[in-house]
Image 1 (spheres, rainbow, N blue to C red):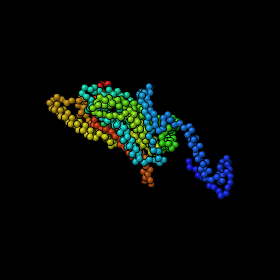
Image 2 (spheres, helix red, strand yellow):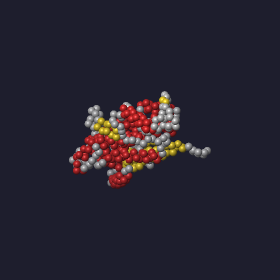
Image 3 (cartoon, rainbow, N blue to C red):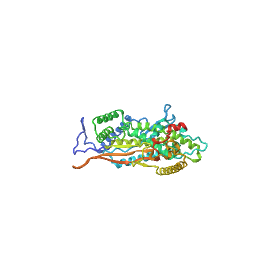
Image 4 (cartoon, rainbow, N blue to C red):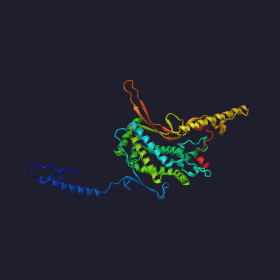
Length: 442
């Protein structure tokens, strides 16, 4: 610390020390004070070195890293797996509300990151089983019930047009990537964006829950509640960028995601080992865990930024089988058009056969009674894979003047990304085989 020399009076005097201040001795010269201040600086440095360090939540590893280690009781990580992951440093939250453009950029950026992580770790290459190879991938991969449950919320592969639609989700790298991004979006919506504040302490959670209950009992409108919640969360953060248990919760969620998709990783690694001539490469487990940890960290930081915004920001994911509408962006438009053209041709051919059958006096058939005539049923543009949610920001509009009208402004900063197909609505299908049933049948 830089120290200033005292202002010397014109006449000599003595140094008088009191309980409140020190009066400098004018008989001392600048060199005397330089030597004194140097001694004081040396003492101050020595005290700081020997002072006990403040304990941090992650003090068991050198900051800024986190140590993730397997153990005998851990069902996700192997006992010999040992990872040290550097922690990302995030920008502080602005004191004033962020603009819609900023959130549009942030959500787009994090979507790109999630997509890149999935493609790098679980996309990569198509699976092309050999002629003599056992072609029952869902039996071989042996995923958890949670995996199947999440996939049911994301994918509509149980249609009669492709009897092996479930298998193509593993064989085709693009479909596999879309499937996993959609599953991650569901996880983030439930585990990251749904809590009132990601990574807060138990006491902070209780306080925020009580606030929500009070606002509900007082019948506060949505905009007032969001503003009050935003102010409360700023008080909880107290100027910090992250919550107290932020990285602890990121670690737990990352390890669970790592374990959830571990069967997919093993399936891809096995295929790569079987075909060394293809020279297929995959990230190491350490690289995969780090990329997942960074991805979850970024999404969790974004969720805190969202909670600090004084206007409601709503995320919505469609369900498989929903009608395609203007709120969606179709990511497989070319495939959708090709599939629809093929169905129209098959439908036309089948109708011709029916007309010929009636002309030959064989009598008409009921298309609903025969799975092979499923092609004749009415079809719609439906969601096949729900990949990424729509994000909308709502703000109140207050009318001005006597004729001014008040209302709500809705700004869509990101549409839902979906894969679409032209299919028979689920309720009208002759047969529909779920993934659980398909895995047992194969």
